[in-house]
Image 1 (cartoon, rainbow over the protein chains, first blue to last red):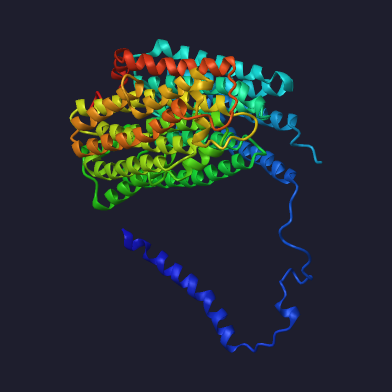
Image 2 (cartoon, one colour):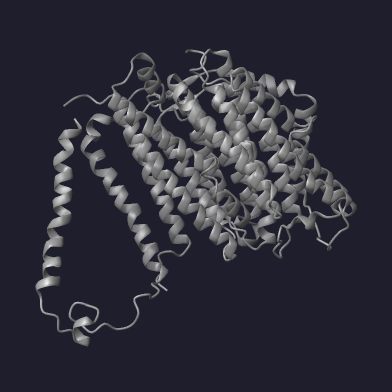
Length: 118
Length: 496
């Protein structure tokens, strides 16, 4: 059974070697005429400005967390909606409890001011 | 299209869980509308919820049931543990009522998080399925990460929260991988079903490799939770930095919950593999006993010392776990009882000891150096006596609760054939007595090095009185407690 996975291993080794070949070849074959511009950090062709270690507003993270709440909600609601016909009342109550707990999380975040952009 | 049938649900099994979950959700909203100055009310409401949940369990005592397709269990074992968790949470909240405002960290979320953590512990005690155990562990851990870092912006608290998060998340990864491997080997996630599969037929060599690797990963994951050597390194740092009531909660609740799940996993699912896992776990138990007790020996910081001592106590409980898996009915049952009795005694004692630390901790940071206990007897005789009783109980000196815990664990281990392990346990207990008595000597004989003010409030006193009374009652009259743990059986132990 383990032999079935051998090709995964072969693939893995090939995947590592293949990109290494052009890099190594370029190192030996390519001409080297460095200039300050060539050695600079590549940033989409623009000149690099400032430090990368900057602080982001914490609101971005809160926003992302609030987004995840509704993301998960949709993930559960779609399969539930498809199978709802067979599931009956119990599923309705179960989903109501689930939605209620999500709404509660939103109310909490809202009241705590997580949705304000300051 | 096939008909989807929903199996009938036995709500009795989930009553206590539903009460705690529901009340925590309601309390989260209530806390939003309680004015800042009256946040204390949320703490009282949380205690009320814990009391109601504890009372709701009484009618079901003695029964054994399961529901949600065997995912949730209710046997006397889990009921006994649920009561321990609820009591520990109530005492911790009582400790916190004045601690939080004194340290300027009074928020309603604290009490809600304690309730959610308690629900996580109850899931760990009641889970009959690896997924439910993982769910309970995550619920418990996630809330505890936040509680550990609750003393924001105190740096030590943040540091300990971060350390706990990193090691805890790492441990969670171990458990998930272990669950996946065990599912691959046995084709089931249900503990009883796994136990059945393993007991009936020998697995293929390949599957056996996966099974043992998976079991080792799961034991490692829970090993972090119960602070078993060599996975104990987080404990001293986290206990030291966490707000003291949270450290108390960590040291008793989260450890007890880890043991609850570990015993269920090893006995119910892996019971037939005992000859394989017993030597490995015995090695870990020896390492835990030695590292915990010798580590505590060289600590001058009392909070860190208690952390190492809690590692050592995990070692004694591991002796009970080893005996719990022993074949032959009676020895195994004795092991489960030993773990429960030890947990009960350890819980009362550690809650008491941390209660005294909370009384000594003022707004300014305490360095927790041992000489701050110097001459405590002269200044606060009652606090000093309480601390002395707790330390003697931790050391296992009769007539305290700790003595009966150790006695039962050693007896169970001896009966299960772990003679040499029992001797190591007794030797390390003798080492442990040294560092506990060192504090007692400081309190009663040394001159006060500096005036450490100590304040107590009614709630803290009530919690301390419960803990100390529990230690003494259990110490002088162990019969009712022993009777209680002897009725607490894993539902499947009797059936095997």
